[in-house]
Amino acid sequence: MPTGEFISTMDGYEKGIGTMSAMLAEEESKKNDPEFLKTLGEKLYAHCQFEGADERFAGVVKLDSTNALGLAADAQLQRAQASGKLENYPLAVAFCEALIKRWPDSKLVPDATIYAGYYSDQAGRTDDALRIYKQYIEKWPKGEDADWATEQVKKLSAPPSDE
Image (cartoon, rainbow, N blue to C red; front, side, top):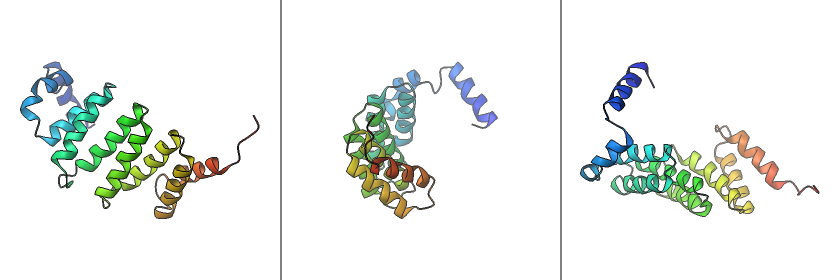
């Protein structure tokens, strides 16, 4: 965060402005503001309140359903991450897949794809994870996660060791 913004944020926190508790207090009056809900969701997520964060991110997806504001796709990916933190990996995969289907032109599709592979693997769905990682490598061979996806394909394709 730039220095000036950081100082302004800290000054606000000192005055009780922008804190999670202050935002929760004003949530009823701002429940139709997707930017507010996204920020509140991020604060809840940062405080490991993943179910509450997901609820706010779901509100963002509903209010920006076409992603016209550029908030819905990001909120959808954050829903996946919150579900992952709660170890609900099938739901995390479903959220990633929904992002890819609803907003195929979003810049977050590669991230949603790699997360879908990761969460599939965490759910024990190795075949799905392999398919998704291979799909990522095929679509984004020079993507920022291509090397990691390649390593996952090697790891998941390797025969089990006798340890």
